Image (cartoon, rainbow, N blue to C red):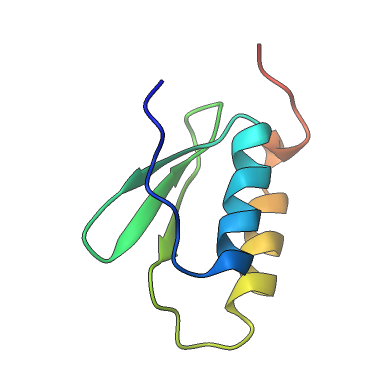
Length: 74
């Protein structure tokens, strides 16, 4: 598997690595990453330069709210 480029914000990078450990995959676009869940139903975008100071907290909750967050895939 090809390693994706790191996110410039270390807090967001930590959330992305946690999601990858749960089976999510990230594809880099020009100004954002696309986050695909393991079940293939959910799609979220992760901005490269978020302007909201609460963006990291909201991203954690947004990913954790999905049905497949707790499901482990093999």
